[in-house]
Image (cartoon, rainbow, N blue to C red):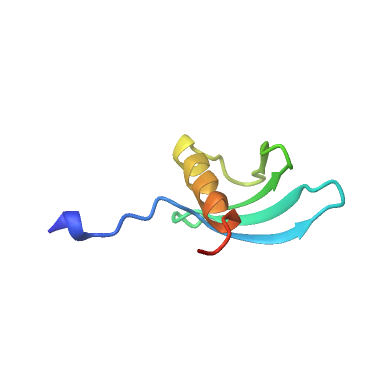
Length: 75
């Protein structure tokens, strides 16, 4: 019954700070154990700081989804 298995395509992201210009700094952990520092501007542009690991396109999607979920107001 694989259709009942929950797929989580989001990274675990934690907001660690917000600068005066509105830029948010996040720490995101992808399920492979990769950890990235991500800066997101008020315009929605994201910059990934990957010092020791190379992010894959799948990593970018998971990070984007993780930050999007954390940024939504609670329902």
